[in-house]
Image (tube, rainbow, N blue to C red; front, side, top):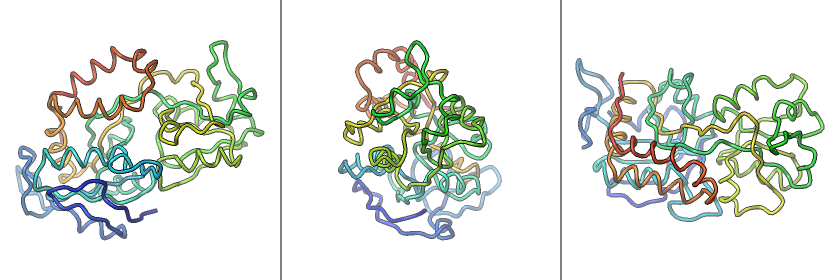
Length: 316
């Protein structure tokens, strides 16, 4: 579902609300030499030895959080736009709401769009160019507190997700078209045909599913525990780790795997491939993590942001 959204920041490159049909998205883009950050006019036609010029980027977003305000209300996407507005002058930025499933369909179709918070998987790399911007703690099971005792768990208190998925008395709610990381994706794909898991396509980034849990329309979902923070820590919900899904999950900016997408992702990477860019990304993530999580993954985070402070190699 696409909708309109007020852009969260005021940029020298105009940012304005939009309401677009999918076909109109094609008219929003022009392309840029991959070696330059400055935008210039041009078409999407690719001349031999060059890439189209990027003058406008339409960002697909579903991370709007009505509980927050300003740049925070558009989450990751708003912060990316705010930073690029300073580092990549001359490029306009617009936000279009599209749920996770529709966003990925548009990228797979080669439409000139980008998304700022996509989980990176080998399968997705076939259809999109990525740069790594986030190394996040793995999703956890978010469950109603009154159903906590019904969860199948190991001695360490971790949820046995395959067993839970087979329990038809427990109602699961997931986001259609979203990747939860390779390990969890495999567990979810292997669930029994006879199950009580429903998939939804909310335009936000999962907040509506948390509301469903609070309203007792579902018992559990899979989500980053920071989503509870963004939802003002609903007292009736709690996060529980999932057995076998303890690895950090790589995510980042994704643009369609086209000449335009290559030009766009290289420009975005150039803006972030410096110490200032890495510091901004780290600050954006750390503010949502608990002290325990920060300490547990401290060495991994340090190594990731050291690499993020340098330009990436992005091959066609």
